[in-house]
Structures are given as structure tokens and as C-alpha cells.
Image (cartoon, rainbow, N blue to C red; front, side, top):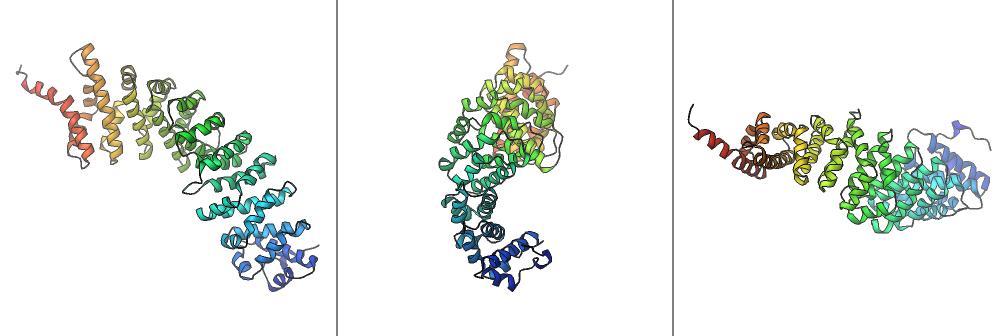
Length: 447
């Protein structure tokens, strides 16, 4: 059949009448014209096609498994309609047909490709549409595409549809789909295609909500080593969902966090913090990398020591000068958490690496959370200084260092801060560590 492209750029009455013909050859010719009109138009005439009343006819064609050509043309048209009007796709029962076609091994790969795309389009439209697609049983057949196909374009399409099935709030119930999705992705996550990995890892991010049970499911699926490895990928489109997923996984119990550390997550996080890149994606990556480190330093002395051994503290101190406030917050929280759960020797190491100055510098920032984190860190450093004072002399050297960094003056000023939490904490620190010192200096006789 020869088709003139100039005759197929617009939807016209002849095409509409043609698909309603009883002649199979005329049906196919005009169904192909519809397909061409949709795929080649700058602004696909989806609304006009829906208004013309031909969608039910294409649904009939989609069921014609004895005529693969017209079935494929119908699949293309309905898939493209799904990009602009999901309601008509749902109302005409197209989802069920696509799910059935996708689940049949006898369906040709290009037909399954159209079905996978269409299901993803509908799932992406809204949480309600996503839930309908899931209720129609799409998850199993979509996951099967990850197992049964070796073509990277088909794997990428399946992964993209999968992420739409996992996205949206509230998330679909993890206990119903989580282990199945993880098992399917674990088999193919070794593929080294940027677009596939970006889609697949974004789906993992949507699944990882940070609950202890879900974290364990990730660990049991043996997917964590590959995720950690992907932190070293060259593309930020892959790294961003991976580091966001690992952030969720770092919120586990000691044994779960230990798995991340043993998989080598800390050196790779260190590399991300020093990677050049100032666009929004890299800012998000650095923020979440710092956030992940702060989750680890909120753990045990062993975990804090792992961060120290990875030489991350000097990097964090340098990164405290980053202009992005969100990154600064995660940096100071990582340092503050380390002072909270760390040993005396670990706190001493933090001081030696210059942690006092960034904590003092950020006491004047407008973010209450950052100020609170800095005050908490400085208070614990002062407590460690009291231990040093008792063993080495009568002077709290850390108190002097905070004063030299203009921290004492800033903390005194914070006693008038509008935040009750901040002003009470500042008052406590001043009265505990400087009031007696100031009184002693006042009472000293003049020389």
C-alpha cells in the first residue's frame, strides 16, 4: 500500500469514514493515516480524533489478533491518544486490552512496546489513573518485559512505565509490589545504558520510603551493592535517583547502615562532594550526599569512625562554605551529629579538622534549623573541652577557640533570638561555659 504523506497530515472526514468501512483494506489504509497524522503533527490532533467518535472503532481494531497490521496501527493511535486524553482510554476499556496483549508471549515486541508506553501514559496522568492501571493487573506484565526482553529500548520503556506505576502520593502499597519490582530490577540493573538506569533507579527511589522493613527488603533483594556502585556513574541523571534512594536506605538500624558502609558507600559519597557541577541536579546530589552522611554520623561510634576513616570531615568543613543553604544545613547537621554520638577522641579530631569555625559562622544564618544544629554541635564540643580541661589544665581550650571564631559573641546575641528553642539553648551555653569564666575575670585584682 502506498501512502502519500501530504494527504495524511490532517484528520479529515474521508479518513473517519474509511475506518468505519466494512472493507479491511480501506480500514487499514485509513487507520494508517490516523497513525501518521498523530505521529507527525507538531500538535497531535488528539481532541479532534476523540470528538470524531472513532476511538471505539480503534478499540475494535486493537482486538483483531488475526490482523497484526491493523492491530498495530490501532495500538499506535490509542497510545498517542493516551498522551493527551487518558479518560477516553480508561472509559473504553483500552487498559484491559493492553494489559492482556502485554501479558501474551505471542504478542510481537513492537505491539508490546506500544502497550507499555500507553500504560505508562495513563499511570502518569494522576494517582487515580495509576491506581486503575494497577487494579487492571498491569504490574506483572510490565515487570515481565524486564525479564523477557534484551532490547535496551524495550527495557528502557518498561522501566519508565514502572516508575510511573510506583510514583505519586500516596505510593502504591510496598508490601504488594515491592519485592516483585526489586527482584525484576535486580536482574537487569547491570545494564549500562544511561536512560534505562535513570528510569529504573527512579522507580527504586519511589519504592524506598525509609521504613526499616522496606530497607530490609532492599537488602534481601541484593540490590544495594549495585546501587552503591552506581554512585560512581558518569551521568547525574543516574546518580540523582541513586543517591536519593541510598538516603532513604541510610535511615535504617545499625545492621542495615552497616551494609551500606561495607558496600563502599562512603568513598563514593566523598567523590560526589568534590565533583564539579553547579546545576540544579548536582546541587540536589550534593545535598542528598551530605544528608546521607548526616544520617550515618547520627549512628554509632563505629559509623562515625567510618566517616572519619573515609576522610570526609575535611571535605564537609570545606563544603560548609557552599553558597547553597540546603547544603550547608546538611553539612552542619552531619558535623553536629558526629559530636553527639562520637567519642571524646572523635570530637577532638573534629576540632582539629576545623569544625568549630563553620559551626560559628552559620550562627547568623536565617535558618533556625541550621542555628539549632550549630548550637548543639558547639555545646558538645564545649563539653569535650571540659574533659580536656580536667586532664590538661584549667582552661577550656575549645571555649577559647569558639571565642576566637567569634562564636561566643554570636551565641550571646542569640539569647535574644525570636525562636524560643534557640534563645534558651544559647542562654544555657552562655551560663554553663562563659558566665563563671567572665565572673572570674571580673573578680581578679588589677595588676
